[in-house]
Length: 443
Image (cartoon, rainbow, N blue to C red):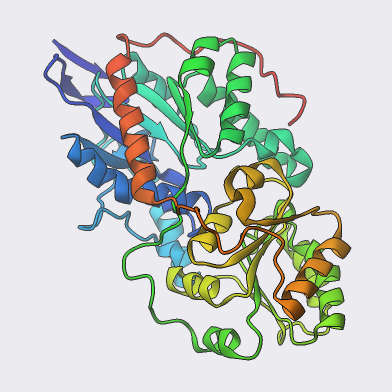
């Protein structure tokens, strides 16, 4: 018997001997210039997950959604995702090429021919959604795959646009609300990046009337703290090398510059620290995100901007690794996080951490971080003055007992969960339940 659908035009032979395949959506990551945050997670899952899948005798396939269908993405020989042209600094030529690529993709869809071969899902396969493809309308193709018996897994990074809508744009909150309803009403299993997020996912699934999935099909894993092979030592730009090598070791802040990351709150902190310890220096590392200029503005008004306070938007892996290793400490003032990847990256490199006192930071940083109220600049300034002048750090240090999480271990857990749920999947899926969105008011 052959199973096929309009979204998957090539027939797939069904039968008990068929091996499952794990398809991983990378649509947004492949279109994104940012190499940290969710794109780093997606790339880590693909790179290490492909090897882990082979150990189970199955294939992990990166895919993207294009012109109304999922298509395969060719991984590099080392299993990594191809770098997108947008990963480098944008140029006029790049912008034109991107527009032409989009037009070509649309034309292929209109003509119904050309371009990559569409994915042919089979009844034993798993489709995993780890990316931030919040505005991609691929639900028809996903429902067609689920009707064949494909198990749908969701990697849940956070619920920030729902729990803290004031920290994101209204458009982001609306798109995320839609995404959460569409994914969680269909998901056969959920993989959360922390137990904090797992608890929120269970509550959301229960609100959607899916107690079985909430109670039995939500697990957590830890994002890896390691970078790619050959990351360090590596070439770093001369200006950054000079800043890291000159005078006192800088305090480092890592993350997209945006409201929820709270970098703007560091301006009064830096002013207080500079008054007590003029030798202190600060490195702000991260691309400027939505409304990020408002966070940078108070920092730019500091007297040491460009000299003792430096912002670099586009550090690559080798440079961020060097920054962690050369820093006095990581200062991480976020108001909301799903995980807090810079915390484990810093701890893994023997760098002390000052982190905002929110539940997920307590979960992953435990006794190895010094915590502060992100709304109390005077307290954080006092901690950094003590660290600068007396090398003080009110936490368990060195971080004895800290075991750095790895992407290989994370991918192993993800692959094992995907295969476990693929085997449990009972036949073809029903349509997702038509239930109201319990969080619509929050968005």
